[in-house]
Image (cartoon, rainbow, N blue to C red):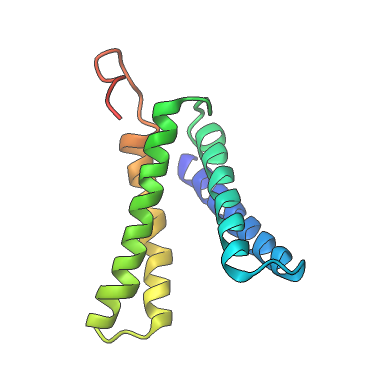
Length: 129
């Protein structure tokens, strides 16, 4: 059930990002700013959705937020590695690299969320990010 909830939140976040990005562009916002605003909104929605709906955690946990944003940064690095280094090294077309990222990132994020971002904490490891 948790994996299903994870997928629902992920699909909703992707839809919100696309709709927000296109709407902001249609309102005349320049592309880099529209992308940044839509992306930040999608990340915030993802955090709230995954914390509360998928993992049943409270959202106002500072350590959890930091771990989530570290995970997001790692996702960016993974995407950059796949599309900027591995894909070109394998002479893969850009679309193939992009598809690889859409497969790798959800798996990577789900694992990181389970074992680190939303893992149960005890008194002995609460101070660990």
